[in-house]
Amino acid sequence: MENYLINYLPILMLLIIAFAMAVMGLGLSYVFSSKIAKIRGNDDEKTSSYECGFDAMSDNEIRFNVRYYLVAILFIIFDIEIAFLFPWAVSLGEIGLFGFWSMAVFLGVLTAGFVYEWKKGALDWE
Image 1 (cartoon, rainbow, N blue to C red):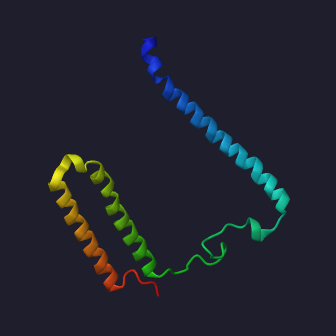
Image 2 (image 1 turned 135 degrees about the vertical axis):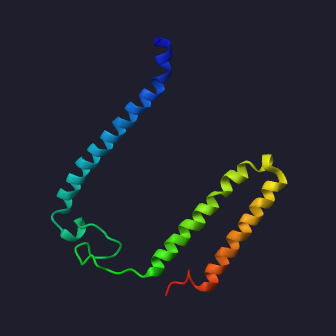
Image 3 (image 1 turned 30 degrees about the vertical axis):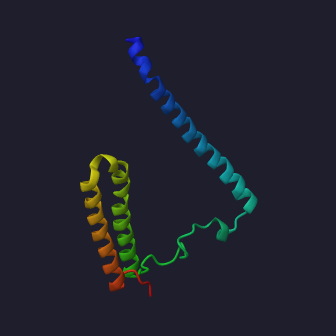
């Protein structure tokens, strides 16, 4: 039984190290943040949070352009589709010509969708 449990020792060590690093990170951030606050003084401009260029205490009813969300969604879609290239590249030697041409068709459809979005003006920021 003791020999069986010794196999889990690296996992236990990893958990102990991870916990110690988390506690150390929190402790150091607390120590240094209080020291930095004392150095800076009570300057509200320097200690305020940065909200993408908007005033942190302003009206929260700011309307964003719909194109912002459209570009973000298109980026996520194309980014996820490009992520399919990594497993394909790793297994290309095993899947042969069928896998190659399947990915060629996939990339063709991806390129056609990208060109369509580009021609429709979905990527233009005005």
